[in-house]
Image (cartoon, rainbow, N blue to C red; front, side):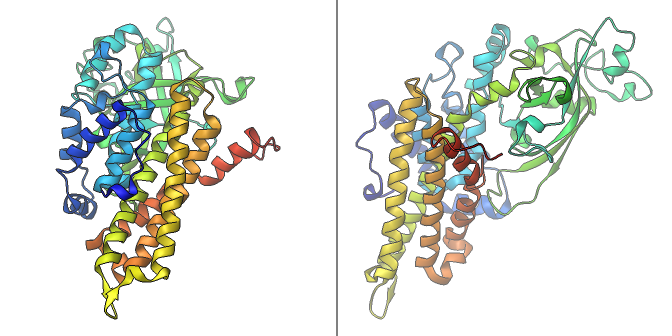
Length: 440
């Protein structure tokens, strides 16, 4: 990546070290590597394994559990670098779940669970890549989720039937001796028969289930009609996916898509999935607030990935504009080529400044909601502008897969939809910053 696109003067020494280290790893994976994985829709196992082996999947974990004990600022640098060095938005998407999904365990998990599970996550031996929140009828409104985790009272006469482990199909469950426990579970997640929850429902747009050992699942534990406030009665669970499959209580359906093809997304189906009580992460009924607790960091990581994608698209377009000659001169001499690229560069750098400032605020404990939503909005718009200008600069080759630009364009379009739409980011700013009436 050319230095002309990387305004890094404000980076701390720790951030520079992260940047150099990630850049060195990314240099091992060229454009053809990412092109092939996009074409074949194949998850980049080699790339992710390299990051895991060098400890980067434990970037946010405390050193007490073998993690790198880094903060939001360093992970922002990491994600920008992964995207900018050739992998694009999708390469960062392949990684970030495994880094951030362990944070709720650190904040809300039991000491026993943390000691049992997190060292393996930090070492890259265990992955918590999947997060199940969105549902077919509950997208932006997370309080409308219908997936339900019913607490099983072990003293109840019908506990066994509620647990889904008894009855005519009880023998089909392939868990532990009691039909509910898998030997692959951490000790901290083992429980007595019937002592736990039974989950029914579905999720959609849950990514990386195929490369994850565990799923963080958000489900209702109190019916919506029984809570005084919509945000109450929602809980978070850690699901052992092997155990769920062995129970025969969990199925997936892959969603075909046209962007980030090698990061697979799924619809999930739960039918009488039994979870031990120890699978509950944090307090029952407080899951919505546990999700909220990480939203600013999520927005900032996505913003960083958008910035990296924008820088990548611009770098490829600039190289092409300097090399491609028409009528005996480089097309980069034409202002019709120069101006869109220069405008996109200005947008990317502006978004980058806001994102890094927001990351510093978040790291120092300042209120970062407005900054994080502003960063996500600006970065997604900048990435799209850069990718669009890159397509135009390449002319017909802008849609040729061998030049990669069309992949960047598709990913940039996706970035305006995830993890929240641009409109929702604007809604947040309108209500919480401008003081306008709530619109939804």
